[in-house]
Length: 150
Image (cartoon, rainbow, N blue to C red; front, side, top):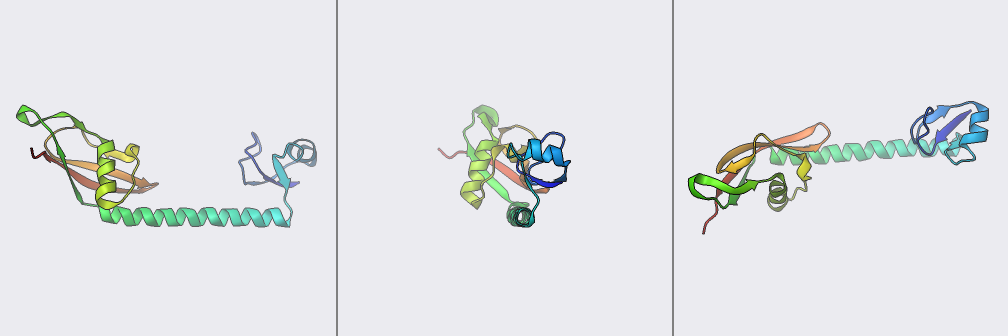
């Protein structure tokens, strides 16, 4: 019997998959527990629509990420920080601060965990940084740290 799974079922498949299971397993286990529904015309149509919407969502998010990557590639993000003698910063410039600056300057909301720094930023200078915007889409930018005007 062909059924569409409504939840992940160990040994059968993941949610939203069309699987072929034995009649007894479907009638006695999957259907009474609402883990699956019979693959009739309506269920097949809903499954097809769900797959199309998922594909469309992925395409639009990828396109938006590529547009943001074009904006960010080879951009220079200037940040200011306080420092002591010898140009050594009090603390460091973190990925969280870089994410906030990206949102302020470019209007792009990036999770701090998606920002990859080559090294810790603990002194003035220019540093390379990679921003992972979406699966397979990333942008490289430079972070320039300058002294805060008093």
